[in-house]
Image (cartoon, rainbow, N blue to C red; front, side):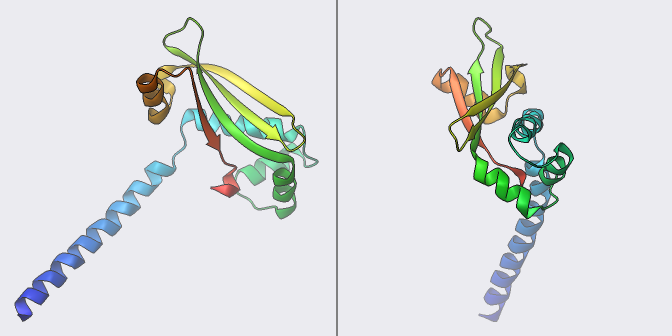
Length: 147
């Protein structure tokens, strides 16, 4: 009986250790933003900077992770949401228009756009476009302090 309990404890211990190290090694890769996500962040910063009283340098620091409660409060008070829209390019089977759409609380929507090859898209977006045949895919985008 004691041998069985010892064996079960050993198996659970090994499982726990393997699981813990596997979770840690997967985290950095999952946290690495794609090129489109980095571009979306720069575009969101550029658009938000036109409507916020803080300087561009201050916004860059806040987007980089340095907390400034006053600036964060102002951004969240003025910005209703940010989406990344992926749209098949007209006539281009292998190209997609990517838009960052910043919706403000006053109803104004500002956009930044660029065209990319479909191979540059995140895997989930590429799969959704291929499987559903949809011409548009939307993904919400969160500010760095919301992630």
